[in-house]
Amino acid sequence: MESRTVLVVDDEKEIRDLIGIYLNNEGFNVIKAENGVEALEILKDTEVQLVLLDIMMPKMDGITTCMKIREDKNTPIIMLSAKGEDMDKILGLTTGADDYISKPFNPLELIARVKSQIRRYTKLNSTYESNSANIEVGEITINTDTHEVKIGDRTVSLTKREFDILVLLSRNKGVVFSTEKIYESVWHEEFYDCHNTVMVHIRKIREKIEKNPRKPEYIKTVWGVGYKIEKNI
Image (cartoon, one colour):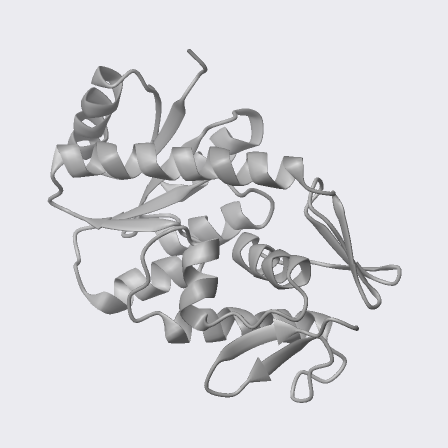
């Protein structure tokens, strides 16, 4: 059986130990960190298949840690929080998290979420590997092996979600994707009221790849329907 290692990041030792017991019982290897700074140090030298990341922590909170992880890794991240407000969930997901679960959590639900994210991550990576590594859209070159995006000789830095959205639209030129379809294709979970989440990501992509984000050359808005990249670009 292949190694399945989960990094559990929480400032409460009791929570770390409890999650560790649940995961160990399911055959997972568990590494523990008590704050974001310690987690980032671990991730420099250790490959993990998923990160369970508490939001409220000293030294470095979970949102900041999540954004720093996303600078160079697409490892699945599930946010943990004692709070259940919608804004916490939206903030966590828009900064790069893949899922969110509130404390106190049901152990069976936690394990199910962990297995689901690892399964989706493995499937997504195998999909990328089965397709051509290079996609060209006008002056843009996208390499799905290295997760690099270039406009001419200039390298553009995209987050994992931004990259996945750009790949989705670029592989399907001329096809209009609704915000619901984009969300379900990229986040790999059922759509809820996430129109704003998708719109924010589209806006950020445009700011990075368009000469004039207000008059986009690449990602076009089809009003009332969704977004597309023109077939003949």
